[in-house]
Image 1 (cartoon, helix red, strand yellow):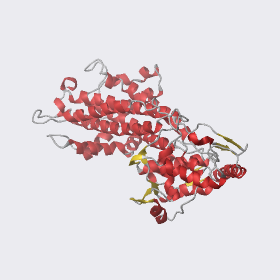
Image 2 (cartoon, helix red, strand yellow):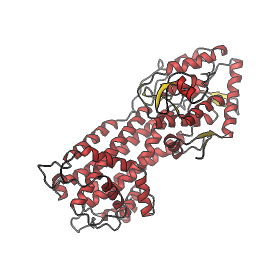
Image 3 (cartoon, one colour):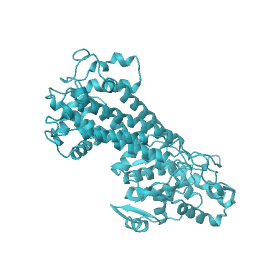
Image 4 (cartoon, helix red, strand yellow):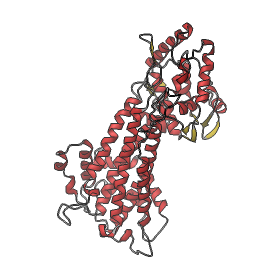
Length: 508
């Protein structure tokens, strides 16, 4: 497998996924090594001259006015990491930790952080050998970056803390020894260079964004199956309608629906059985399309952030200048992740309303709750309950974290982003929405069977058949969560979308 070469400028979200989930190896570019060494020289010069520079020869936060002599620089950096390791909660998933390590290494590769090449290399070696720091999920304010969780990332580098290695949780010293990686002693600026940044929130957000893109595609196919289950009107998806309101996502969704439903015998035209459908069918392009546009916006922001220098101070070696700024502030990501939560949540919101139309006999003209012996059997009644519960939970989770701020460090750091909370919320909203869409998919397939499946569309047929390979039609009540879980595995897999895109000969 080809190495991913990082230089601080060209990392993609796809690269992040390859490293985080597929364990692709990482290597610094030669240019990055030169830039790292150049900025390190500036730091060494300032330390030797005992110039007063924040974070290099001073304390941190409110202690920025306290001078630290060069003979105490190593103690200062070690104390920084240990004192800032205040994370709490469950450990972050392995894939998120791997993404964090990659993004931090890529930020350091830009050459503005003043860290030693050997220190960056230790972080990359841990990533490549699968030594994953135990990083608690909670404790970051999102400015000055993700200080607490990133400190937990650094602890094993200095032989402290815990790691996961080959599926086992152990002390960092054990894990590093088992992987044959030397622990290090941090020196001036290095602790700060490793923890002052937005890489935790961005890692969580990047993986969530990647999954949201795939979910938005499968949501179109699931919606198409519901259209067929309800004999929906496809006239509303006509290109002429959407060309006069040319939002990119809206146009894309309408095109998707027409292609997915091509040659279906289960859809209708305007006026055949009714004049128009309810909003949750008729407005799928407008609703799903708005989510697609929001996702594209967030994607553009993440692509900037994963290739940014976000620590403080920044070392500009070409001018021999050190500038204390605020690139660690997570507000650009915080706003984006709140927006992402809302966008994903709306896929679930409209999905549950379509599900309700399927199970409600006054709206579907199908047996109540899609079961033929109603009363004795409850059918899909509680599937809708469960979906409604998740929709309501998502609404609570979509309260924006970015509007909250609590001053810290004796009011020196008096506005913070809460961006990491925003990223974690977006991840939870995504998980809930996957389940809601799984419930709709299961229900739509049942409705299609009750209409005797007269022939599905070119794309919807593929997803329907995949579901029926795993889950049979409900004839009598059975344990439903097992079916929901099986269907969720199908929509999480990227294979189903690849199969549909291949069949349609187009990208959804």
